[in-house]
Image (cartoon, rainbow, N blue to C red; front, side, top):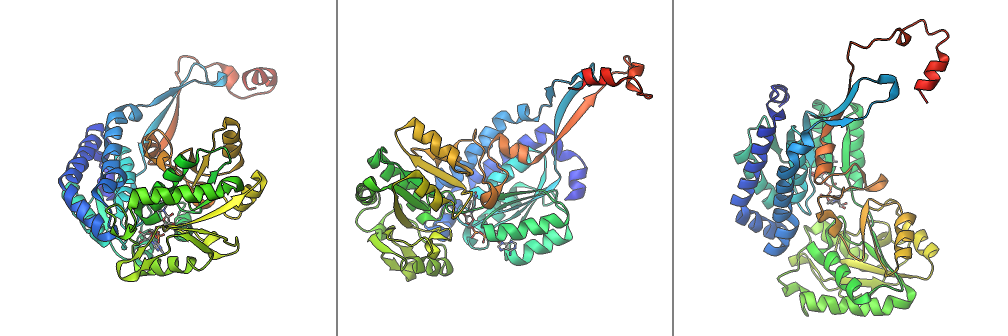
Length: 448
Ligand code: NAD
Protein backbone atom coordinates (compact mmCIF):
# COMPACT_ATOMS: atom_id res chain seq x y z
CA UNK A 1 0.00 0.00 0.00
CA UNK A 2 2.81 2.33 0.83
CA UNK A 3 4.49 1.66 -2.50
CA UNK A 4 1.19 2.24 -4.26
CA UNK A 5 0.74 5.55 -2.45
CA UNK A 6 4.25 6.60 -3.33
CA UNK A 7 3.56 6.20 -7.05
CA UNK A 8 1.54 9.41 -6.58
CA UNK A 9 -1.47 8.05 -8.44
CA UNK A 10 -3.91 8.67 -5.56
CA UNK A 11 -3.09 12.38 -5.54
CA UNK A 12 -4.71 13.26 -8.85
CA UNK A 13 -8.08 14.94 -8.80
CA UNK A 14 -9.50 12.66 -11.51
CA UNK A 15 -8.33 9.54 -9.67
CA UNK A 16 -10.06 10.64 -6.46
CA UNK A 17 -13.21 11.63 -8.32
CA UNK A 18 -13.30 8.34 -10.19
CA UNK A 19 -12.89 6.30 -6.99
CA UNK A 20 -15.66 8.22 -5.22
CA UNK A 21 -17.97 7.70 -8.17
CA UNK A 22 -17.13 3.99 -8.21
CA UNK A 23 -17.87 3.68 -4.51
CA UNK A 24 -21.19 5.42 -5.07
CA UNK A 25 -22.09 3.07 -7.94
CA UNK A 26 -21.22 -0.08 -6.00
CA UNK A 27 -23.12 1.05 -2.91
CA UNK A 28 -26.17 1.74 -5.10
CA UNK A 29 -25.76 -1.66 -6.79
CA UNK A 30 -25.70 -3.44 -3.42
CA UNK A 31 -28.46 -1.36 -1.81
CA UNK A 32 -30.76 -4.33 -1.29
CA UNK A 33 -27.97 -6.54 0.07
CA UNK A 34 -26.98 -3.75 2.49
CA UNK A 35 -30.59 -3.48 3.62
CA UNK A 36 -30.85 -7.24 4.18
CA UNK A 37 -27.58 -7.30 6.11
CA UNK A 38 -28.53 -4.41 8.39
CA UNK A 39 -31.89 -6.03 9.04
CA UNK A 40 -30.10 -9.22 9.99
CA UNK A 41 -27.63 -7.48 12.30
CA UNK A 42 -29.88 -4.85 13.88
CA UNK A 43 -33.41 -5.22 12.50
CA UNK A 44 -33.27 -1.78 10.92
CA UNK A 45 -36.08 -0.79 8.56
CA UNK A 46 -35.30 0.26 4.95
CA UNK A 47 -36.33 3.85 5.75
CA UNK A 48 -34.06 4.04 8.79
CA UNK A 49 -31.25 2.50 6.73
CA UNK A 50 -31.63 5.15 4.06
CA UNK A 51 -31.57 8.05 6.52
CA UNK A 52 -28.78 6.79 8.77
CA UNK A 53 -26.66 4.51 6.58
CA UNK A 54 -26.94 4.23 2.77
CA UNK A 55 -28.55 7.60 1.98
CA UNK A 56 -26.34 9.31 4.54
CA UNK A 57 -23.24 7.88 2.86
CA UNK A 58 -24.37 8.63 -0.69
CA UNK A 59 -25.17 12.19 0.26
CA UNK A 60 -21.68 12.57 1.79
CA UNK A 61 -20.14 11.28 -1.46
CA UNK A 62 -22.24 13.69 -3.57
CA UNK A 63 -21.35 16.64 -1.36
CA UNK A 64 -17.66 15.73 -1.54
CA UNK A 65 -17.72 15.30 -5.33
CA UNK A 66 -19.37 18.69 -5.66
CA UNK A 67 -16.71 20.54 -3.68
CA UNK A 68 -13.58 18.43 -4.02
CA UNK A 69 -11.88 20.43 -6.73
CA UNK A 70 -12.24 23.62 -4.77
CA UNK A 71 -11.10 22.00 -1.50
CA UNK A 72 -7.96 20.76 -3.24
CA UNK A 73 -6.97 24.23 -4.46
CA UNK A 74 -4.09 25.82 -2.55
CA UNK A 75 -5.24 28.63 -0.25
CA UNK A 76 -3.46 31.92 -0.77
CA UNK A 77 -2.90 33.83 2.44
CA UNK A 78 -1.45 37.24 3.23
CA UNK A 79 2.24 37.66 4.05
CA UNK A 80 3.69 39.39 7.09
CA UNK A 81 5.72 42.59 6.78
CA UNK A 82 9.06 40.87 7.48
CA UNK A 83 8.66 38.65 4.40
CA UNK A 84 7.30 41.13 1.88
CA UNK A 85 7.45 40.80 -1.16
CA UNK A 86 7.05 37.01 -0.68
CA UNK A 87 3.86 35.10 -1.40
CA UNK A 88 2.32 32.63 1.05
CA UNK A 89 0.05 29.70 0.38
CA UNK A 90 -1.18 26.47 1.94
CA UNK A 91 -1.32 23.21 0.03
CA UNK A 92 -3.36 20.23 1.15
CA UNK A 93 -1.42 16.99 0.90
CA UNK A 94 -2.62 13.45 1.44
CA UNK A 95 -1.28 11.84 4.60
CA UNK A 96 -0.41 8.43 3.14
CA UNK A 97 -1.89 5.13 4.30
CA UNK A 98 -4.53 5.56 6.97
CA UNK A 99 -6.34 3.09 9.21
CA UNK A 100 -10.09 3.50 9.72
CA UNK A 101 -11.71 1.47 12.50
CA UNK A 102 -15.51 1.21 12.76
CA UNK A 103 -18.05 0.18 15.42
CA UNK A 104 -21.16 -2.00 14.99
CA UNK A 105 -24.06 0.39 15.60
CA UNK A 106 -24.06 2.15 12.20
CA UNK A 107 -21.58 -0.25 10.66
CA UNK A 108 -21.75 1.01 7.09
CA UNK A 109 -22.02 4.75 7.70
CA UNK A 110 -19.29 4.87 10.32
CA UNK A 111 -16.74 2.94 8.27
CA UNK A 112 -17.45 4.32 4.81
CA UNK A 113 -18.09 8.01 5.63
CA UNK A 114 -14.52 8.48 6.92
CA UNK A 115 -13.36 6.52 3.85
CA UNK A 116 -14.95 9.18 1.65
CA UNK A 117 -12.77 11.80 3.37
CA UNK A 118 -9.67 9.60 3.09
CA UNK A 119 -10.19 9.06 -0.66
CA UNK A 120 -11.08 12.72 -1.24
CA UNK A 121 -7.84 13.76 0.42
CA UNK A 122 -5.82 11.33 -1.74
CA UNK A 123 -4.91 8.60 0.74
CA UNK A 124 -4.76 4.80 0.73
CA UNK A 125 -6.93 3.27 3.46
CA UNK A 126 -7.13 0.11 5.53
CA UNK A 127 -10.66 -0.50 6.82
CA UNK A 128 -11.39 -2.51 9.95
CA UNK A 129 -15.09 -3.28 10.41
CA UNK A 130 -16.60 -4.32 13.72
CA UNK A 131 -16.86 -8.07 14.18
CA UNK A 132 -20.25 -7.60 15.91
CA UNK A 133 -22.24 -6.72 12.79
CA UNK A 134 -21.06 -9.68 10.68
CA UNK A 135 -23.69 -9.59 7.92
CA UNK A 136 -22.95 -5.92 7.19
CA UNK A 137 -19.20 -6.56 7.43
CA UNK A 138 -19.55 -9.29 4.77
CA UNK A 139 -21.35 -7.03 2.32
CA UNK A 140 -18.95 -4.15 2.96
CA UNK A 141 -16.04 -6.50 2.26
CA UNK A 142 -17.62 -7.42 -1.06
CA UNK A 143 -18.21 -3.77 -1.97
CA UNK A 144 -14.61 -2.83 -1.22
CA UNK A 145 -13.17 -5.84 -3.06
CA UNK A 146 -15.28 -5.06 -6.11
CA UNK A 147 -14.54 -1.33 -6.13
CA UNK A 148 -10.86 -0.94 -5.27
CA UNK A 149 -7.48 -2.58 -5.74
CA UNK A 150 -6.16 -4.08 -2.50
CA UNK A 151 -3.10 -1.83 -2.55
CA UNK A 152 -5.44 1.16 -2.47
CA UNK A 153 -8.26 0.23 -0.06
CA UNK A 154 -7.92 -2.92 1.99
CA UNK A 155 -10.71 -4.45 4.05
CA UNK A 156 -9.71 -6.25 7.26
CA UNK A 157 -11.90 -8.49 9.39
CA UNK A 158 -11.44 -10.22 12.71
CA UNK A 159 -11.35 -9.65 16.43
CA UNK A 160 -10.34 -6.02 16.97
CA UNK A 161 -8.29 -6.77 20.08
CA UNK A 162 -6.10 -9.11 18.00
CA UNK A 163 -5.87 -7.68 14.49
CA UNK A 164 -5.60 -3.99 15.34
CA UNK A 165 -2.55 -4.28 17.64
CA UNK A 166 -1.02 -6.67 15.05
CA UNK A 167 -1.36 -3.99 12.39
CA UNK A 168 -0.51 -0.93 14.47
CA UNK A 169 2.55 -2.53 16.07
CA UNK A 170 3.96 -3.71 12.74
CA UNK A 171 3.18 -0.85 10.40
CA UNK A 172 3.40 2.89 10.94
CA UNK A 173 0.11 4.30 9.64
CA UNK A 174 0.00 7.94 8.69
CA UNK A 175 -3.26 8.47 10.58
CA UNK A 176 -5.69 6.37 12.59
CA UNK A 177 -9.37 7.26 12.49
CA UNK A 178 -11.23 5.36 15.21
CA UNK A 179 -14.94 5.28 16.04
CA UNK A 180 -15.99 3.32 19.10
CA UNK A 181 -15.97 3.24 22.87
CA UNK A 182 -13.85 5.52 25.04
CA UNK A 183 -12.23 2.46 26.70
CA UNK A 184 -10.89 1.10 23.38
CA UNK A 185 -10.17 4.64 22.18
CA UNK A 186 -7.58 4.95 24.96
CA UNK A 187 -5.90 1.72 23.80
CA UNK A 188 -5.78 3.00 20.21
CA UNK A 189 -4.36 6.34 21.35
CA UNK A 190 -1.59 4.59 23.31
CA UNK A 191 -0.66 2.35 20.39
CA UNK A 192 -0.59 5.34 18.04
CA UNK A 193 1.55 7.35 20.47
CA UNK A 194 4.42 4.84 20.20
CA UNK A 195 5.08 6.08 16.66
CA UNK A 196 3.55 9.53 17.08
CA UNK A 197 0.78 8.58 14.66
CA UNK A 198 -1.92 11.26 14.62
CA UNK A 199 -5.42 10.12 15.53
CA UNK A 200 -9.02 11.09 15.19
CA UNK A 201 -11.05 9.55 17.98
CA UNK A 202 -14.83 9.52 17.62
CA UNK A 203 -15.89 8.20 21.01
CA UNK A 204 -19.04 7.94 23.08
CA UNK A 205 -20.15 9.22 26.45
CA UNK A 206 -23.26 10.34 28.25
CA UNK A 207 -24.94 13.04 26.16
CA UNK A 208 -27.44 15.01 28.26
CA UNK A 209 -30.68 16.56 27.09
CA UNK A 210 -32.02 19.59 28.97
CA UNK A 211 -35.72 20.38 28.94
CA UNK A 212 -36.28 23.85 30.36
CA UNK A 213 -39.47 25.05 32.03
CA UNK A 214 -40.28 27.21 28.96
CA UNK A 215 -39.77 24.37 26.42
CA UNK A 216 -42.43 23.23 23.97
CA UNK A 217 -43.04 19.92 25.75
CA UNK A 218 -44.99 18.18 22.99
CA UNK A 219 -42.28 18.86 20.41
CA UNK A 220 -39.46 18.08 22.86
CA UNK A 221 -41.05 14.73 23.74
CA UNK A 222 -41.44 13.70 20.10
CA UNK A 223 -37.89 14.66 19.14
CA UNK A 224 -36.37 13.03 22.21
CA UNK A 225 -38.38 9.81 21.71
CA UNK A 226 -37.50 9.67 18.01
CA UNK A 227 -33.76 9.94 18.63
CA UNK A 228 -33.55 7.95 21.84
CA UNK A 229 -35.34 4.86 20.58
CA UNK A 230 -34.05 4.88 17.01
CA UNK A 231 -31.75 1.84 16.48
CA UNK A 232 -32.98 0.79 19.96
CA UNK A 233 -30.93 3.55 21.55
CA UNK A 234 -27.64 2.24 20.15
CA UNK A 235 -26.57 5.61 18.81
CA UNK A 236 -23.53 7.60 19.88
CA UNK A 237 -25.42 10.92 19.86
CA UNK A 238 -28.63 9.64 21.42
CA UNK A 239 -29.76 11.59 24.51
CA UNK A 240 -28.35 9.36 27.22
CA UNK A 241 -30.54 10.93 29.93
CA UNK A 242 -32.93 13.85 30.27
CA UNK A 243 -32.61 16.65 32.80
CA UNK A 244 -36.02 18.29 32.95
CA UNK A 245 -37.13 21.31 34.95
CA UNK A 246 -39.10 19.91 37.92
CA UNK A 247 -42.22 21.88 36.90
CA UNK A 248 -42.35 19.97 33.56
CA UNK A 249 -41.31 16.48 34.58
CA UNK A 250 -44.75 14.86 34.71
CA UNK A 251 -45.88 16.59 31.52
CA UNK A 252 -42.75 15.43 29.70
CA UNK A 253 -43.17 11.80 30.78
CA UNK A 254 -46.82 11.82 29.66
CA UNK A 255 -45.81 13.40 26.32
CA UNK A 256 -42.98 10.91 25.66
CA UNK A 257 -45.34 7.99 26.40
CA UNK A 258 -47.84 9.49 23.98
CA UNK A 259 -45.17 9.96 21.32
CA UNK A 260 -44.03 6.35 21.72
CA UNK A 261 -47.57 5.09 21.33
CA UNK A 262 -47.92 7.16 18.17
CA UNK A 263 -44.55 6.03 16.74
CA UNK A 264 -44.41 2.36 17.71
CA UNK A 265 -47.96 1.34 18.71
CA UNK A 266 -48.98 -0.62 21.80
CA UNK A 267 -46.31 -3.27 21.32
CA UNK A 268 -42.97 -1.91 20.16
CA UNK A 269 -41.94 -5.54 19.70
CA UNK A 270 -44.27 -5.82 16.71
CA UNK A 271 -43.39 -2.43 15.27
CA UNK A 272 -41.87 -2.18 11.80
CA UNK A 273 -39.71 0.68 13.06
CA UNK A 274 -38.23 -0.72 16.23
CA UNK A 275 -34.80 -2.40 16.28
CA UNK A 276 -33.06 -5.02 18.42
CA UNK A 277 -30.03 -5.12 20.70
CA UNK A 278 -26.90 -6.21 18.86
CA UNK A 279 -26.01 -9.27 20.99
CA UNK A 280 -26.54 -11.09 24.31
CA UNK A 281 -23.61 -9.39 26.00
CA UNK A 282 -25.09 -5.95 25.38
CA UNK A 283 -28.59 -7.23 26.24
CA UNK A 284 -27.43 -8.52 29.66
CA UNK A 285 -25.58 -5.27 30.39
CA UNK A 286 -28.74 -3.27 29.65
CA UNK A 287 -30.97 -5.60 31.69
CA UNK A 288 -28.95 -4.74 34.76
CA UNK A 289 -29.86 -1.04 34.40
CA UNK A 290 -33.57 -1.84 34.63
CA UNK A 291 -33.07 -2.66 38.33
CA UNK A 292 -31.58 0.75 39.14
CA UNK A 293 -34.68 2.94 39.49
CA UNK A 294 -38.44 3.08 38.97
CA UNK A 295 -39.73 2.10 35.55
CA UNK A 296 -42.46 4.55 34.53
CA UNK A 297 -42.94 3.24 30.98
CA UNK A 298 -41.86 0.11 29.13
CA UNK A 299 -39.53 -2.36 30.85
CA UNK A 300 -40.55 -5.55 29.00
CA UNK A 301 -37.75 -7.70 27.60
CA UNK A 302 -37.33 -10.85 25.53
CA UNK A 303 -33.85 -12.34 25.43
CA UNK A 304 -34.63 -14.78 22.62
CA UNK A 305 -35.39 -11.80 20.39
CA UNK A 306 -32.81 -9.46 21.98
CA UNK A 307 -35.74 -7.13 22.55
CA UNK A 308 -35.93 -4.39 25.16
CA UNK A 309 -39.04 -2.25 25.17
CA UNK A 310 -38.52 1.54 25.02
CA UNK A 311 -38.22 2.30 28.72
CA UNK A 312 -38.42 5.47 30.81
CA UNK A 313 -37.01 5.43 34.33
CA UNK A 314 -37.00 7.82 37.28
CA UNK A 315 -35.78 7.85 40.91
CA UNK A 316 -32.26 6.99 39.82
CA UNK A 317 -29.25 7.51 42.06
CA UNK A 318 -26.37 9.42 40.49
CA UNK A 319 -24.06 6.78 41.98
CA UNK A 320 -25.67 3.89 40.12
CA UNK A 321 -23.95 2.47 37.05
CA UNK A 322 -26.78 3.63 34.75
CA UNK A 323 -25.67 7.19 35.54
CA UNK A 324 -21.96 6.39 35.18
CA UNK A 325 -21.81 4.24 32.03
CA UNK A 326 -22.94 5.25 28.57
CA UNK A 327 -26.33 3.48 28.40
CA UNK A 328 -26.29 2.79 24.64
CA UNK A 329 -29.72 1.18 24.65
CA UNK A 330 -33.44 2.03 24.81
CA UNK A 331 -33.53 3.12 28.45
CA UNK A 332 -34.11 6.78 29.25
CA UNK A 333 -33.49 8.10 32.78
CA UNK A 334 -35.47 11.26 33.52
CA UNK A 335 -34.06 13.41 36.29
CA UNK A 336 -35.53 16.71 37.46
CA UNK A 337 -33.67 19.91 38.35
CA UNK A 338 -34.72 23.26 39.71
CA UNK A 339 -31.61 25.39 39.13
CA UNK A 340 -29.08 25.44 36.32
CA UNK A 341 -26.29 24.90 38.86
CA UNK A 342 -27.94 21.70 40.01
CA UNK A 343 -28.17 20.42 36.43
CA UNK A 344 -24.61 21.39 35.45
CA UNK A 345 -23.30 19.62 38.57
CA UNK A 346 -24.99 16.39 37.36
CA UNK A 347 -23.53 16.80 33.86
CA UNK A 348 -20.08 17.40 35.37
CA UNK A 349 -20.07 13.80 36.68
CA UNK A 350 -19.48 12.73 33.04
CA UNK A 351 -17.57 15.63 31.49
CA UNK A 352 -17.18 16.49 27.78
CA UNK A 353 -20.21 14.69 26.33
CA UNK A 354 -20.19 13.99 22.59
CA UNK A 355 -23.51 15.80 22.21
CA UNK A 356 -25.66 18.20 24.20
CA UNK A 357 -29.28 19.17 23.63
CA UNK A 358 -31.38 21.94 25.11
CA UNK A 359 -35.08 22.55 24.65
CA UNK A 360 -36.08 26.10 25.51
CA UNK A 361 -37.98 28.99 23.96
CA UNK A 362 -35.62 31.57 25.43
CA UNK A 363 -32.60 32.73 23.40
CA UNK A 364 -30.96 33.86 26.61
CA UNK A 365 -31.22 30.42 28.21
CA UNK A 366 -30.08 28.74 25.02
CA UNK A 367 -26.87 30.84 24.96
CA UNK A 368 -26.30 30.32 28.65
CA UNK A 369 -26.55 26.53 28.33
CA UNK A 370 -24.46 26.25 25.17
CA UNK A 371 -21.68 28.29 26.77
CA UNK A 372 -21.84 26.58 30.16
CA UNK A 373 -21.17 23.00 29.01
CA UNK A 374 -18.05 21.72 27.20
CA UNK A 375 -19.34 19.24 24.58
CA UNK A 376 -18.63 18.03 21.02
CA UNK A 377 -21.65 19.40 19.15
CA UNK A 378 -25.38 19.52 19.61
CA UNK A 379 -28.79 21.00 18.95
CA UNK A 380 -31.22 23.57 20.27
CA UNK A 381 -34.81 22.28 20.24
CA UNK A 382 -33.68 19.22 18.32
CA UNK A 383 -31.80 15.97 18.92
CA UNK A 384 -29.03 14.18 17.00
CA UNK A 385 -29.75 15.75 13.62
CA UNK A 386 -26.76 18.11 13.74
CA UNK A 387 -24.68 15.24 12.38
CA UNK A 388 -26.66 15.15 9.14
CA UNK A 389 -25.49 18.63 8.07
CA UNK A 390 -22.27 18.31 6.00
CA UNK A 391 -21.40 21.90 6.84
CA UNK A 392 -21.03 21.16 10.57
CA UNK A 393 -17.94 19.50 12.03
CA UNK A 394 -18.84 16.27 13.82
CA UNK A 395 -16.69 15.11 16.72
CA UNK A 396 -16.21 15.12 20.45
CA UNK A 397 -13.80 16.70 22.88
CA UNK A 398 -11.77 15.22 25.69
CA UNK A 399 -13.44 12.00 26.85
CA UNK A 400 -15.78 11.99 23.83
CA UNK A 401 -12.99 12.25 21.31
CA UNK A 402 -10.52 14.36 19.42
CA UNK A 403 -10.77 15.77 15.89
CA UNK A 404 -13.83 15.98 13.67
CA UNK A 405 -15.14 15.03 10.23
CA UNK A 406 -18.01 15.23 7.69
CA UNK A 407 -17.85 17.24 4.49
CA UNK A 408 -14.88 19.58 4.27
CA UNK A 409 -13.85 18.68 7.81
CA UNK A 410 -13.23 15.07 6.66
CA UNK A 411 -11.08 16.31 3.80
CA UNK A 412 -9.09 18.40 6.27
CA UNK A 413 -8.78 15.54 8.76
CA UNK A 414 -7.15 13.36 6.11
CA UNK A 415 -4.94 16.11 4.67
CA UNK A 416 -1.75 17.70 5.83
CA UNK A 417 -1.71 21.46 5.50
CA UNK A 418 1.68 22.45 4.15
CA UNK A 419 2.47 26.13 4.56
CA UNK A 420 4.77 27.56 1.87
CA UNK A 421 6.51 30.91 1.69
CA UNK A 422 7.78 31.82 -1.80
CA UNK A 423 10.29 34.65 -1.93
CA UNK A 424 11.55 36.39 -5.06
CA UNK A 425 15.27 36.83 -5.50
CA UNK A 426 15.27 40.27 -7.10
CA UNK A 427 14.75 41.96 -3.73
CA UNK A 428 17.49 41.08 -1.27
CA UNK A 429 18.30 43.93 1.13
CA UNK A 430 21.43 43.61 3.26
CA UNK A 431 19.45 44.49 6.38
CA UNK A 432 18.23 40.87 6.43
CA UNK A 433 21.70 39.45 6.97
CA UNK A 434 24.26 39.61 9.79
CA UNK A 435 25.73 41.52 11.34
CA UNK A 436 22.52 42.57 13.07
CA UNK A 437 24.22 45.09 15.30
CA UNK A 438 22.32 48.38 15.29
CA UNK A 439 19.28 46.97 13.48
CA UNK A 440 17.09 46.56 16.56
CA UNK A 441 14.88 49.54 15.74
CA UNK A 442 14.16 48.32 12.22
CA UNK A 443 13.35 44.83 13.56
CA UNK A 444 11.04 46.41 16.13
CA UNK A 445 9.28 48.20 13.31
CA UNK A 446 9.03 45.06 11.16
CA UNK A 447 8.01 42.65 13.90
CA UNK A 448 5.33 43.85 16.29
P1 NAD B 1 -15.76 -0.83 20.49
O1 NAD B 1 -14.81 0.17 21.05
O2 NAD B 1 -16.02 -2.05 21.25
O3 NAD B 1 -15.26 -1.31 19.05
C1 NAD B 1 -14.91 -0.43 18.02
C2 NAD B 1 -13.86 -1.06 17.16
O4 NAD B 1 -12.68 -1.29 17.93
C3 NAD B 1 -14.26 -2.40 16.55
O5 NAD B 1 -13.86 -2.45 15.19
C4 NAD B 1 -13.47 -3.40 17.36
O6 NAD B 1 -13.11 -4.54 16.59
C5 NAD B 1 -12.25 -2.63 17.77
N1 NAD B 1 -11.66 -3.09 19.06
C6 NAD B 1 -12.32 -3.63 20.09
N2 NAD B 1 -11.46 -3.92 21.08
C7 NAD B 1 -10.24 -3.52 20.67
C8 NAD B 1 -8.93 -3.55 21.26
N3 NAD B 1 -8.71 -4.03 22.48
N4 NAD B 1 -7.90 -3.06 20.54
C9 NAD B 1 -8.10 -2.56 19.33
N5 NAD B 1 -9.30 -2.52 18.72
C10 NAD B 1 -10.37 -3.00 19.37
O7 NAD B 1 -17.05 0.00 20.19
P2 NAD B 1 -18.46 -0.55 19.75
O8 NAD B 1 -19.03 -1.33 20.89
O9 NAD B 1 -18.36 -1.20 18.43
O10 NAD B 1 -19.28 0.81 19.58
C11 NAD B 1 -19.98 1.42 20.60
C12 NAD B 1 -19.26 2.64 21.12
O11 NAD B 1 -18.89 3.47 20.04
C13 NAD B 1 -20.14 3.51 22.00
O12 NAD B 1 -19.35 3.99 23.06
C14 NAD B 1 -20.53 4.67 21.09
O13 NAD B 1 -20.87 5.85 21.73
C15 NAD B 1 -19.31 4.80 20.27
N6 NAD B 1 -19.65 5.43 19.01
C16 NAD B 1 -19.18 6.67 18.74
C17 NAD B 1 -19.53 7.28 17.56
C18 NAD B 1 -19.04 8.65 17.21
O14 NAD B 1 -19.24 9.04 16.07
N7 NAD B 1 -18.43 9.39 18.11
C19 NAD B 1 -20.34 6.62 16.66
C20 NAD B 1 -20.79 5.34 16.98
C21 NAD B 1 -20.43 4.76 18.14
